Length: 302
Image (cartoon, rainbow, N blue to C red):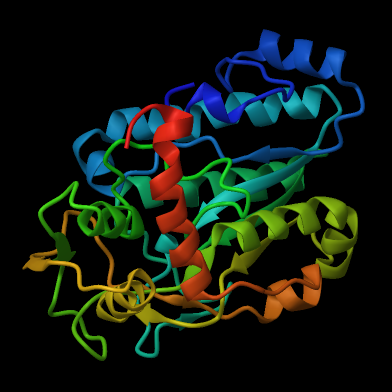
């Protein structure tokens, strides 16, 4: 385990270990033979860091996942729900992407996610492994009960940076990239409330075999987003409206590996999962702000 606070575990069954530790995987399955599916979301995820440390990203995201998948097949636990990323998509003029659109992963991080998709697709053809690949767009916010949320002391993600600027922990929020080919020059993203994302996972596990039967394939890829694109400037406007005051903003060039962005075509998630988002951008921002007030109590730091 590289990141993630133990405070979030509470009284849940928990094993601390490496996803490539086959002996540990065998013990978990022996102690919990009723396990039906594995949700694989363990990964290094910071784009600029992946540019600086490609070895660590390929080792932890790709090589270790190979061991996990092979052992799950050997254990007779072939259902894998995999966290992938919208950062794989090539830029489109209208920014709306379907699962069949061209891919152009622009960073080592994104390339590790695409490699894992290919591994799952190939293993699903050759073995009993079965995979549903969820391409996340941009999760933001906290769970409604404020029991968990962003835990990095200085989060790299946009909303975490905004919260820090709003609370005076940072001097300002920095827009990285202002000359993109979007309606206001800033990057465009599809910001999904993390609670909606969690609901998508529950639905995918509940309907796992039905989803693959409907897709008529041993693996399938599904976009998980709102179906709406929001620029960084629009996000700042929404944030300031919810927060109730202005946030100091500065501008800078794009970071290494940054993409212009995209938003999800969500027809496939509606059809296969019977799922769609229920929570608004404002609700996601409000929950992130509330978590910013609460997290010192849970994690011991602001």
